[in-house]
Every structure is written in structure tokens, then in C-alpha cells.
Image (tube, rainbow, N blue to C red):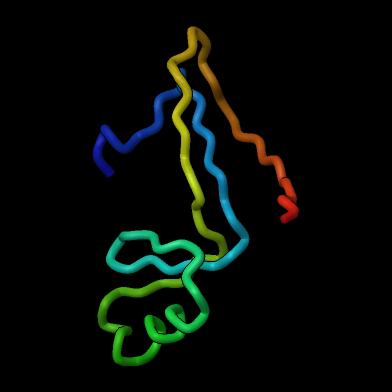
Length: 83
């Protein structure tokens, strides 16, 4: 991890997750794939491409403007979005 990948302690970060599973291929997250695509990626033929499953997938990440305060800790908020 480089220093540019580290999160700053005077910024607020928001990450929206979906409980739909996804996969990571070579470090690249592929969220909410259709089940047929996940099955193809998880076959023995593709196992040499470093495919790993994720229990949830990232929908969006936000970085809010710098604060004049030091921010520490984390909080989670579970929401159910109805159609």
C-alpha cells in the first residue's frame, strides 16, 4: 500500500455497500455480477486468474472535503431500499 492509498484522519469517507456478492479478479472489484457470470468465473478453468469471492460489493465511495477536526472511528448504518 502506498502513502497515497492511506486515508487521512481529517477527512470523512463514506462507502455504500450492497449485500449482493461480487468477485475480485486480479485486484479489480466486480460487484453484483449476475449468478451465471459468477459461476463462469469460479470454474476450475479460471482459478488461475486469482478470482476471489466477496460477501458484499461496493456500490460507491465518497471522500468529503477536509475537516478542521481529526476524525477517528467508524460508524455503520444499515438501510433497506425498497423498489
